[in-house]
Image (cartoon, each protein chain N blue to C red):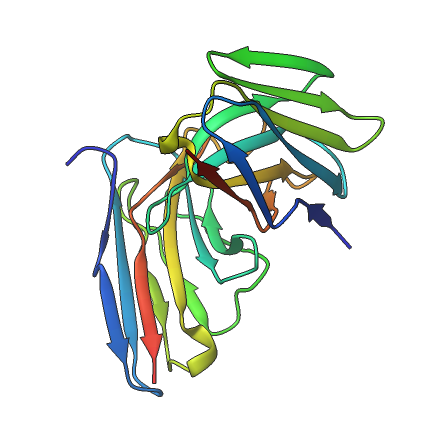
Length: 109
Length: 115
């Protein structure tokens, strides 16, 4: 079967750095997405990786290792507004997104 | 309209009733999707449409049907609602349903409770 694993919840301090991991086992791979979802709201796109390596976008970076079936989202200089769930999703061989359950990130002052 | 709209925002529905969730996008995206999101589970694809006039089944299609008469609209129908269909439903769209970096844009969601 297909599986996306992420930690259920993480806590970090305002101003710090946090790394949210995602491991996947899917039938085929056509890219990995990270989305942010604030409570009660819709998911919004953060990043996309299809080749191995690090993609940096402001305070957020995303890393991919296809051989290890592994990705992480790195958030720097955490702000209170970063409190949200972070969803990892992999596009499989049928070009459909398979979603992880999400990691709830709690930021403390 | 800017983006994707969904209606209603929330609904309480008696079991056995028929219900249509509406979704409209103004971005001229070819592909549209319906997901359900339940606590502790990832988004699960119900149905999708890669282009107007075509639809496909996702991971959890049973009890749901869709149509895609034009590019903008993608309604989801529950023929006879059951309590297990209580969930938050998200509609999404993207420029293409297949290859490439085409992120999905999501509507605000419909919170449905079936009693």
